[in-house]
Length: 579
Image 1 (cartoon, rainbow, N blue to C red):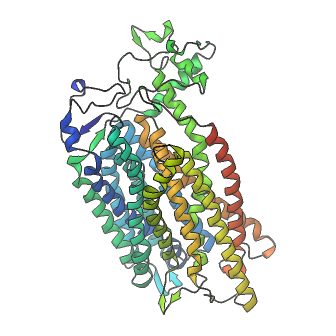
Image 2 (cartoon, rainbow, N blue to C red; image 1 turned 45 degrees about the vertical axis):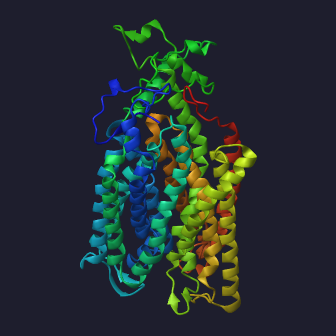
Image 3 (cartoon, helix red, strand yellow; image 1 turned 60 degrees about the horizontal axis):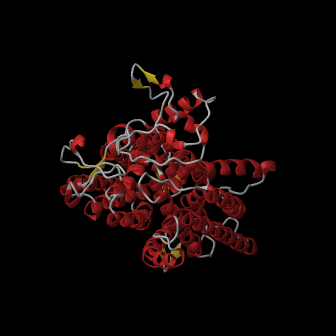
């Protein structure tokens, strides 16, 4: 792990003793090792994540019905607006990650953006509770929103999207930073941390998809948004409470600047031949990298054109000093190579995220057409996502305590499955989730047709038939999303870990945007000639199963592409490490 310091102690980095891989040597600095980091610091980080996710899912799980009923939007429009907003929530992490890696560090980025998040949640509560801003409702489905109220609602939602942009890419990386890669005892706990990190996310989601959804449907949206706002405030308190225990990685300067330096330097030397002896390429003689808070990286053969940036020429020295726009270190070149190699793996996560996004849009609309009462108790359709959460809560300890030890016996890998194998398993399971949703819709429409239920609001088919598709997606998450979190953290250059975590999150953004685009295309093509289309307001007259078949087909093709790029991928290796 990169250089670690106690947040409450000013450390003179010139006096620190470093191991051969460039990290702080805790054997000569035992005070920091014994009092900071590891599982001692993690409860505050996990508590922060649990409360923040409770706030997020408490707001987003039922949002499609708030748009449709309270803001009086068409089904397709409501689905698109939710997808676009959620996509933005996973795109803004690029902003927060850049600031964290380049200038602020992860601690202050989380702190500052959390304040913006709380502001957005507060404003959303006001828009849903204050007369004059909140929609005037005659009945559940007969609401009249005001223009100002709608504007404030969307302003609040996109403030939340900005706030989450500084939290999402940093919290998981910040938790992993508490375990030192140079210490084998601590390093083996890091993979387990990602499992329990995702577990804490789903504890928050469990409360949101059950209690908060019920409050929104039965008590009111003022309380339904107000409670998540309070939860977010608790998340901020939890985070600050652990300040004295955290280990902080120093920001390494702008990663984009270093990337452009490599690109420009290699282009300037495009006619120069790279030597066969790669030891002739430029690298600092010191044990640590010139990049603040980063270990040196071994040279790799991939993308050899970029090696030209590390070829030392006389013209690279301006007035006795090295011009970084003409000459880059091997480590700097390998940073860019690492990012490029991540991109194909990143791209294959987009289809999976499009599948995942259906839980907060079309799954909810599908459930709203079914029988939502059990023993006279009405179940909000959005609360079915609780079974996705329960699935994750079930599979995380099963994976960590049973699957990993069992797989380890056969593979010999310390984590049981490699990160790429783990993600691949999740992609396969997601295909069956979409097939399950499509089969359910075929059965549902068969009941509608046989009994002429076209204009019946809730057909006599229990909404609990949706449980398998939610459970399968939860299982797929444990393999793909957690594997993705660990993979992008582990394979990122030390000084770009927030940025690469943000890169992994943008698969969710593009997945939501892809879902929105597919809905738009499908609606435009399937409604030609006055037809109701695949996704009309009255799904009893639609063909929603075709949309699920479409996602199933795309997922199969995506998995085939994934197998190719995963076989091609080579894991990064820091200098002085086995991998």
